[in-house]
Amino acid sequence: MLDYRPFSSLGRMDIDWLSARYHFSFANYFDPARMGWGPLRVWNDDKIRAKSGFDPHPHRDMEIITYVRTGAISHADSLGNRGRTEAGQIQVMSAGTGIQHAEYNLEDADTTLFQIWITPAAPGLKPRWETRTLPGVDDKNRLIPLASGQGLPETMGIYQDATLYVAHLEAGGEIAHQLAPGRKAYVVGFLGQAEVNGQLLNARDGLAVADVDRLTLTAQGSGSLLLADLPG
Image (cartoon, rainbow, N blue to C red; front, side, top):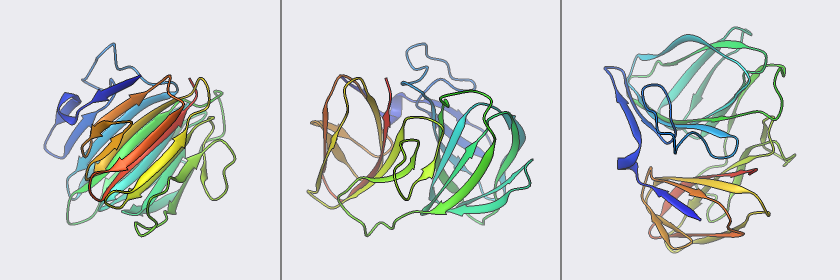
């Protein structure tokens, strides 16, 4: 099953400092058919205006992954962590028993990012935060694991049996990915166009995948996408 979700169909919120698109129900957007996909609960596509951002607010029992596409985001939290995550980097925050954080775009231009929430395998875990530089866009035509709870090397850990991958495809490039029985996937393109098992995916479209054992990702031109491999 391939459930194609074009960018134009996503939930939306536009205010003076934030332009957000929601792949799943969030904030003012509610769609009972889009409440999550396996443990994937939130996939937000945010544009944060320069010199603005999210004031301190709390979370608990959620794995929150931020993939920065352009610009940078500056983080501060109640554990004393401080850091700046820029395009080409990823940050992971495990909210666990509770954490309060703020995320600001302190740059002189807009920042664009994906914010991805995954429900942890167990509640009440120890909260934490880290940021890391990703492999560069010159690493082509393969799925690169970024954050995982499957014990994959050189990834940032999350408390769930899931893995988030990035792929940078050259024109005509093709990648195959096996999904184990009972697992799901969610795919979002963010540059260029690609086909996933024949379904065209434009930049910032989403695709929910279930009951499929093999995904074939084919670039229509050069492009990039994220793929979350998830338990059912």
